[in-house]
Length: 308
Ligand code: GDP
Ligand code: MG
Image (cartoon, rainbow, N blue to C red; front, side):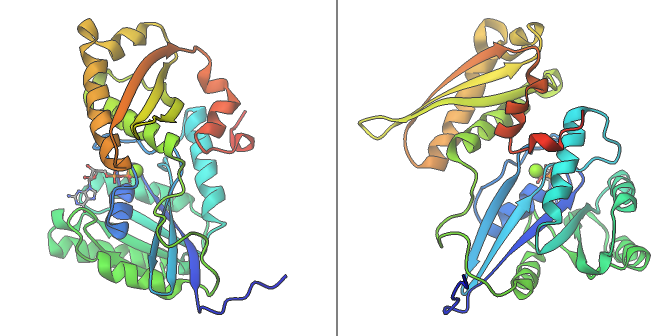
């Protein structure tokens, strides 16, 4: 059946690839102009696939903010995340590689990743980010070197944080979009289900409050979600750790830590959903949660892509 496209609509999917901390989530938020993904100063916080939708005029661009790509994946979860990112990237209309240009180590990390990328780069755009923190001469030299070495389609220099260069990038994205009907209603900004989004918010607060103490093997699951008669939201979430010793770290002295995490998360959730939120957090120990394929599915990762 042919889908009529009488409205001249254009729609396409754009994948953002980049090392952890390159600024993918920040860029997506800047492009969309609203908080849709989780931004955190700690690496590796965007674990689930988050897409954001930008609709303007006849155009609709759907951004896939991939989980971090690692130069040297060791853990099963990291490998699964990379397989997922690749799998998704190749199904989209355009791939854009984001590089943190502000730190030498970050550029080197990106180059290890790039050397593993299968071309052709002539259909991939390079985005140099954090230009607010780079002297102009070294920025131009870097752009020149990467363009010559890899032959990207084009190079954009942006500050995802401050917004400079983002307008040109947005225009470029719109120009690339193939003709086709929109995939989402005009007012939709993310296709991540609300309970999953709420779990991401709490996970962000755990990262921010626990710093170095944070157990790596941790996940948050929204267990119940209910709109009460008065319109308030009641959300119950389980913080799942793999070792019983980690439970105390999350709770903190006299439960102070989890209380603070809950208060911070509740504040953001109320803003996000535009209503009063009653949030209940529990800590659960599940030793084998990383082996549980259902858990991957909940995190948006196709279990068939998890290496054995
Ligand atoms: P992701 O892991 O690629 O999604 O990276 P995030 O978007 O979470 O950003 C990682 C860190 O880099 C955060 O602390 C951001 O505030 C910071 N950051 C992102 N973009 C910029 C930028 O343009 N300039 C500067 N100075 N910092 C940035
Ligand atoms: Mg991110």
